[in-house]
Image 1 (cartoon, rainbow over the protein chains, first blue to last red):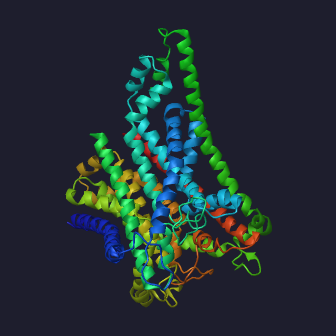
Image 2 (image 1 turned 45 degrees about the vertical axis):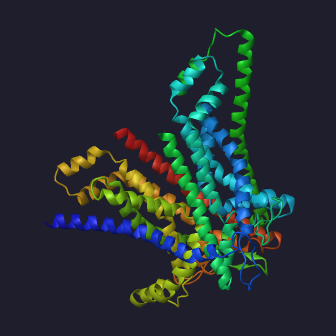
Image 3 (image 1 turned 90 degrees about the vertical axis):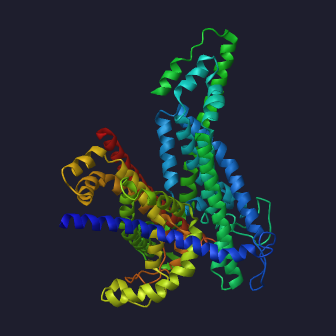
Length: 275
Length: 327
């Protein structure tokens, strides 16, 4: 009898644990939506630059453009290189070099995001003597690299070997088999990996702090400091002006929507490919 | 092994010699590109090390190992020591694990068990995965505006009321500090802890569980004396990976820890962690020694996280190896 009682108790405890883990997520989402929605619906939020502190109104156009451009350039750098490294790992990587690459990629995955900011600072800001969005893009590209290359490798390894052999038996050289048969067959996994990496990069703040630095006016030149949504959230939260704090919530909601949309897109894409 | 077969099929005697040469040269080019990409990531890793260590050299040569035992951080007199932020990093990560380990393990046990309450499992898994995808600055914003007042007005006074005899819970609470930062970190590492331990528990051979149940053990007894002992190595790996994440988390911690360079026994006190010092002071650091000391902190942080992560991966790898061998 006592044993059954203990069993029930443990069962209830386990359910409690999962509830406790899920509650913060619900609370967080509710908060971000409730506090952020009015700000997002304010006219000018998407079309204006921030106003000076204390002056009401203004928007986050600078940050929206900045986030899109910084992550875009970062993806242009990281996706082709990451996909190529993934191809190397799956098609040529059963050796010492492949293991080394995998190890480096695992280590990069585990590094704190601020370390990528330091990397961007030394490699770009110190050498050009100028804060720039490009420095942030390069920092984010290195951060995205391991996600993309591991996703590519996994996707390519799932392609049945008979497909490769069929191509080779038809007389196609190995590179054409890889690029025209194996990669298209694995495209779903590769795109998903790229999207997940972009979602993660868009939400990062630490790599931006001392690379792109932030900018209150709209800037599209990647060699200049640029705003970013994550920076808007971080900086506006810490100033004592209610309208800027509201803007922080609205920017947070927008960021969450962007990240969630990218994640969902990745999932939907996977499901469609699998079918 | 499968790729070996593919290679053996390559010879194509039916193709003319000139075409054969073209095929081979195309393959060679592609191979060079693929190897080049692999070389590139090694190059990036090398540049990473240089980018981190070289700017730190002024501080490394000046302070040496004394950096780790000094709690002075005085930009005016150019004296820097890492003891306070190292202390803050360890304390907040420890709090995070104290919170995330039991809750995460419990939740993982629930999610890995495919017998009961099947309807709840999907949505709950989804929610917890969502948490993993929320940008840390958003969690920081939420913690800054809603968690800190809650801690200041309710949680901290309550803790000091019942546990105030311990030095850990003495002093006035501002809402910012080690405890709040640790709590936020705990929430942030929960998804990793849950996902990894769930996978580890799922990898426990089904026969073991069924044998135990068939012998008359209850679910709780099976969990305690069969599943957990078997999964111990893997769960340790999951805890270490969570720790690696907690050690390096930057923005959310920076927003709630109070950013004060001090060591205090009280968990209500404000403090600093390695990443938050770097995030907070980097752009205002003037002079080689100040900036170098921040880089030195970066080197320490990166080394610690690498060691923790590699150890974690070894454990999980060893576990999944043994689970596969048993299956």
